[in-house]
Structures are given as structure tokens and as C-alpha cells.
Image (cartoon, rainbow, N blue to C red; front, side, top):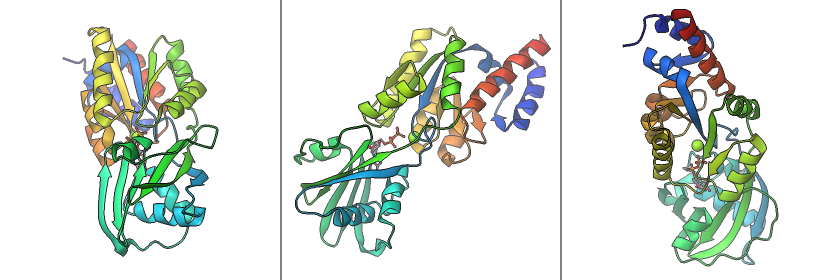
Length: 289
Ligand code: ADP
Ligand code: MG
């Protein structure tokens, strides 16, 4: 059982915008050995911007952007929002006759007699669509577009890291806590973000279920000696949040599913609040023992 003093710690945490759903989680926060972060919306702002457009010879940039924005009209993914923002004009959502999300990969949408795929390169390859070599250099998430089974172009989209993310990772590393990033985003983007933030290990191109497998790997590595934290924000993150020793959700822009599944909720979406939560937990333990 958990010493009564931890309940006081829960009150203290809540005054710092940290919602702890049980005294046992506060105690667990004093023996963290590994922190695993989701990337998009957790370490990065999740506010994407379209920086570059490449098209096949059949489309102009304007035409490709209209097709992509229309195809993405029903998606709540931050990537979809950035495409609609770049288009910036009205979208005829009534024209959509079929819409489907392909988890961790993209979407399939039908309108005006066209079948449109938007998402990872892999999504097009899976549909036997030939994809040309990328022309643009530099780092960014590539959103590939196909129309009626043919490559039509791609959009290059980027995101910025959150304030305090780099400092949070540095503090954890300094405390001897292993830092890991898991993401569905492509490998080269994962690499660039991990390098920029000082994350020790990262794994990209993951499907939602792969994140669970990695979490379990890290838990097994510790053999019960020390806790594994997972920090995430999306609908896709709920299974990992549930299985983590301590699941931490970003509460501000986080999905309801993530907030529900989490043990600790950071009301302000700031990664540095995780370090505050761990400090409060350690202080509470000192006071009650
Ligand atoms: P993350 O792990 O970064 O939160 P997701 O699992 O939500 O990522 O998505 C993984 C990848 O699938 C994205 O990086 C993107 O390449 C692609 N993707 C997902 N949803 C969409 C969409 N609506 N439109 C285009 N691409 C998408
Ligand atoms: Mg996410």
C-alpha cells in the first residue's frame, strides 16, 4: 500500500497543472529509469507547414494542392490540417463519396470519380503505384499523393520542436534516465529530431502496434528494476499509455482517448512538466519517510 503522504503530493502536483490519477503513480515516478516519448504533438508542436511541392507532369502545384486538400477534408491529423491551410480556399466536402483512414500510413478518398491516396511512400508502394526519386533535399515529412493509381506529386511538410523539449531531454539524460523517441514518421525525420533534441535512442516508421512492442522491450530490459514512462498525445498512443508503468498524456491538445488512458495528465502540453512531476514525487517521498 502507498503511504498516506502521497495524497498530499497529488494536491501539490495539481497546483502545478499536473493531474496524477493515483498515489501509486506518484510513488512510481520516483523510480523512473526510461522515458519514451511520442514525437508529433509531444516533443514537436504538431503544427505542420507545407514547405515544398513536387508534381508529376500531369498536374500544376495548384491542382495538386486542391486535390490533396479535398482528399484530406475529413482527416483530423495535423498533417491534413496543414494541407488544408496551405490550400486556403473553400473545399467541397459534399463531393466526397468514400473516405478511409489507413492507420499510421495515410488516407484514401474518392470524389468526382477519382480515387486519391495521400500518405507515406509505403502506402503508394503497397497499392503497386510507382514512385519517382525525390528531387528535394533536406528534412521534412513527405506526403505522397496518387490519383487513380498513378503518382501525382508530393508535399514536404515540417514541424518545429516544442519549447523546453531539449532541456527536458538533457535533464533526464543527466539524471541517468534513458531517453527514447517512437514515431510513425519516416526514419530521416525521426533521426533529425532525435539529434536536435539529444534523444539517446529513436525508432521511426512505426505502426501504432509497433510502439507497444518497443515499450514492452524496454520494460523487459529493466527486469522490473525501475519504471518506464511513456509520454504521448494521440488517439494512436492509447494502447501504449495503458501498458506503460506510468502513462503520461499531454492534456491541452491531446486526444480524449489519450487523456482517458493516461495515469498522469500534463494540463499545459509542456514536456518540462514531466520533470516537475518527478521532482514533486521525489520531494513528497522525502517528506513522508
Ligand atoms: P505519429 O507517430 O508521428 O504521431 P501517426 O501514426 O499519426 O504519426 O502517422 C504516421 C505517419 O502516417 C505520418 O507521419 C504520415 O506520414 C502518415 N499519415 C498519417 N495520417 C495521415 C494523413 N491524414 N495524411 C497524410 N499522411 C498521413
Ligand atoms: Mg502523435
